[in-house]
Length: 128
Image 1 (cartoon, rainbow, N blue to C red):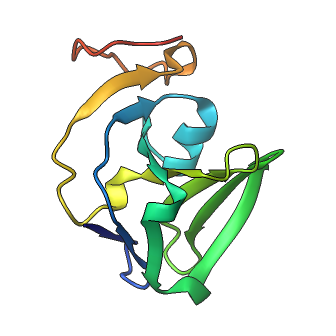
Image 2 (tube, rainbow, N blue to C red):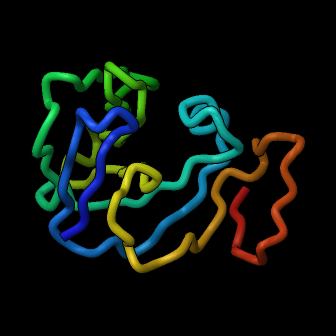
């Protein structure tokens, strides 16, 4: 069981299962959502994820048609992204994990739109 929370601690969640792959997304939406050079995320089965506290604090925003981002309305921490076309899976923002997922990032995505001041030198595979 993995656990996670937002910055203020109001929203708490559990993931009943292992995370299989973490990726670093460099697209402009993820950069702006995270306020950083990239956003680290992992796909988890929707059935394995549950909020255990703070559901009333959650806000949701449709960033693109069918793509819904959930975040804490008090502190702004991004928690996950839901896709209408893939309701069985969620995109978890792994920076909100309180537990060690036991794996490191495996790949960089959308590097063609990465921040111009970022150099990727870790040797991980990259997709444009």
